[in-house]
Length: 509
Image (cartoon, rainbow, N blue to C red; front, side):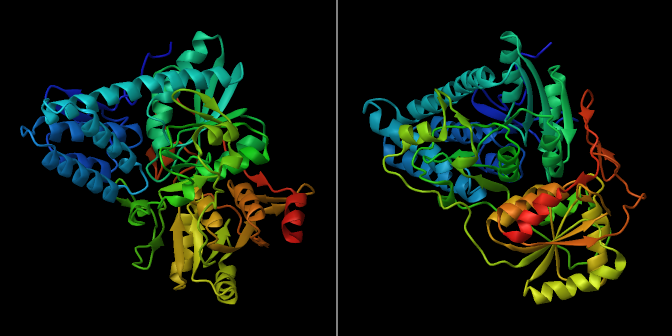
């Protein structure tokens, strides 16, 4: 039985003279709403990630409605100024999201209103009506997405698209299609585990959970035949911006011949995704989970990076699914571009990191420090290496004990740092050699493919045997705390074989 609607589909509700926001940081343990009585409360909810994705759209529009309905003046100027200031505040809180574009609707309404009508009441009514229209458009978009999926759809997804996958599942069922989902856990806020997997299981949709680093492993084994994600922004040239980890997912889909679909909105004035500043959230948000430190060492020298979004170029996208139509990147450009503008992709920065993937032997840490100096890098880059957290729990403490400059990222952040040109070399530690290729821990295949696709050299090194004493055996827990919701299966993640041909191609490039 598939539920008609997930509570995340409309996570912000207008009631009477105000609105309330579903606190997504508490889901699935609690379904609790935050009463919003002023814009400052709304801004805090957005800043603290209590609402995100479509919730931000509704929060912005309803905040404008709240200001407008409390305005009893006849002059337009003061109300317009307040709404412009509100838009600026939302942009400061989350700079990548298109609050500026949403703010343009207020200006349109000011220009089209009748002069003898109270401006506050008019604007408040228009804002609430637009929210209803977008919600209706999301239903049509879900129906359109279901129509292009195969009859036995095995879709992979990343992060959370605010209940829309449940709607897709409902329309698949109505048309007689099978639909199951592989969801990435989506670090660091675990929206894939807490929100996507939970809402799909609640709706009776078969769903399994994997760590972010296992996307290549699952695709290589032919377990998915579609990837479907949301988009926080789309650009006129067909690029999208979405939760960090979307770009490497699109790259892997291209490598393994899996169609990649993005649920998008009107790009408005955005020419290319590279024109948007990518929000970098405090690295400290990676370093604690429910108040507990992620890194065993309490060394104050722990550094972390958290780019919150990444750019997926149009060339990696099969179809963009809009509110009113289905597009290829070419037809999307025909619809929205007034004049062609090539995507410049991610902005390039200096190559300052040497990426470590796998588990070095204790005797190899000094070599890594020397290799960093030889590469003239600034820091050794370590991913968490889920599900066992080998990077955070074993490798990083080993580096810190030797006073090595080290930086931690979540596994899904590798792609954007490669694309930005920040990774100069990869040291891949394998656990064994076979005729097919070296064996590595989960995520090794993604790391090598990303390096190959971005022209970054890989050095193969024999590493430490995989430790048995770990807190997390699979993706069902994080630091020993259960994160897998009831009704969600855990897809076993094993070691990965990196084909010798891929290593040879990489070294020859």
